[in-house]
Each structure stands twice: as C-alpha cells, then as structure tokens.
Length: 70
Image (cartoon, rainbow, N blue to C red):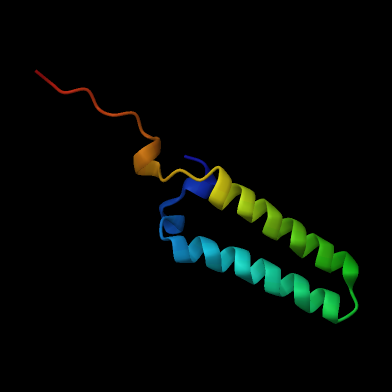
C-alpha cells in the first residue's frame, strides 16, 4: 500500500481538505510577503492533487479480484 492509498484518505472530503489547506497556506505565505514559502506550499498542493485525484485508487479497488474457490 502506498501512503496516498491509506484508508484515512478514502473519504473524498479529506482529500479535498488536504489540498485546500495547502492552497490556503500558500495564499497566506504570499500575502505575508514570503514568496519562497508560498511556492513551497503550492508545490505541496500540486503534489497532493496529483496523488489524491490523478493517481488515487482506493485500496479495495486496487486489489485484484479474488478467484472463486470451488
């Protein structure tokens, strides 16, 4: 199991919340005059979008179907 497939991230609202927190953090950093940390936070947000919405497959869906026992 990869970290982004952890059962904690199964509900969609949690994945959205992680991305939103990173974006809000980025806005705060840019507004306070620290663009270096704003870019870092934007990078975290971009990585989270990539992991949680592009590559994300819940652990149940990622498993191959079990073969029926006869």
